Image (cartoon, rainbow, N blue to C red; front, side):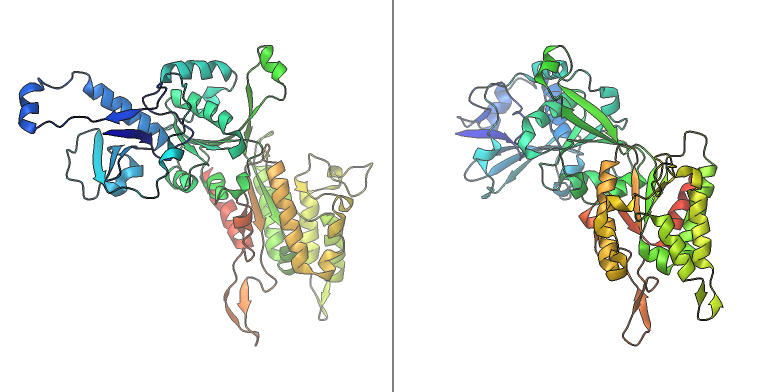
Length: 455
């Protein structure tokens, strides 16, 4: 019988035994008794261990196994001590030191054999392919792309419409012994994020890939300074490659620094916490060396003028002097003094300012919205900040939304009694935009303290 040898669900990578015009076959056309085989086999092939090691390495770099399929069974071959296959080893009684493990399983009825074997028919050998691809990718700065960890783990987030380019990049990195994970494989990102959450790794993204859909991306950006992010794209003109320029170009994203966006809800209903965050921010920034001040505070358009108006309105509360908003206005002016404002364009801040607050004319849909519908205004500004964060990923790494509801974070019943804490992210903004983290003012202050303690 002829049984096709396949690579599980990795449609983008070539078969192990390529090149072969008809694909790779596991051919079994005779039966042999154990006694006959024992009498005539004449010892083990000397290089079988290295052959097994090559298969192990092939599978390890692709987080994959090999299958030989028949209508009555499925033969699975996978590397020992591979985390991806540990769920099969709990009841294993095989040779513990063998580099490969074999499992004879029932047939897999839903496994699409034709789909998984649609590999290119005229593939180069692994060595030839690596050499050829390496030549076409000159200039990608492999020292920057390849992480320092033992696994050399790389996750590729790429549009499905451009899988050919993704394959070229993957082949080049695999030739450098990198372990490749792909957004095309279901569950690969969750596995990668959990396994390399605090380990060196590289995430390679196409500029058009929706990286904000990568679940809990913010956790990697916040907690793992060893995770490197790089965008890779083709050069705009084919003439560039004809003149010796590399086929691809790359740029680092999410380098360092943070931006904290404070919602109007916090400014309006929790001015003490907003003032404390700004005060701590100014203090932390002042302690940094010249050139190392990469952090920013972001707020609604025209924040200084709005806070000045709010401070005047709230100076007196029930006949008592309430200077909390006046103090907050003083803090925002310390963060952004007059010299940070454009002298030729009133209300517009200079790019060098530590405060990010666009001119109101740049977002006309927001003007007057807070006074009409506070929730809609906050929603609009969070959506704006998510877009800003994606556009500014070349300059900053971590993006926070500092938000707390009007009730001060408490869930209030109809009789006015508090029943618990309201979530900081009631609208699931961080699920919608996974590159931003949503925190309460207290959580932001704790995060700032944590970073300060690490220095």
